[in-house]
Length: 107
Image (cartoon, rainbow, N blue to C red; front, side, top):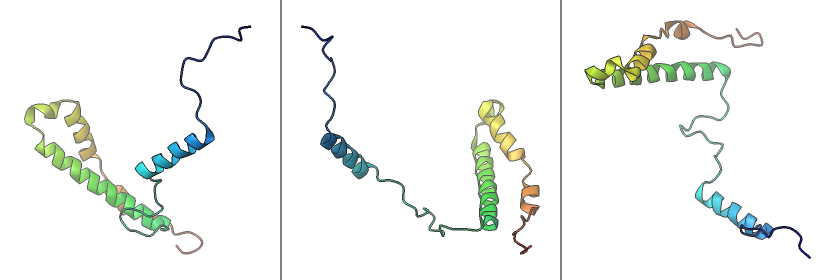
């Protein structure tokens, strides 16, 4: 008496085999740690996070400007050059001038 087609692939893994695969993956790529790579504190205020974000944007804009300056002249008119120029042209002075409220009457 036939009960359908026979499976063509490998048999399903046992619980022990699945657990062994999981542990092997953890050894290769451990889960992300809760420590920040820059060594900063885990809990920062919103104000500190705002200032860090603005500083990061300024640093990125400077890096893109350096990339644009190093770009050969013929490539500056292409898609890469136009995208870099758009980033360079962003006026971040307004972001720098903003001082977010501290909240809870600590303004």
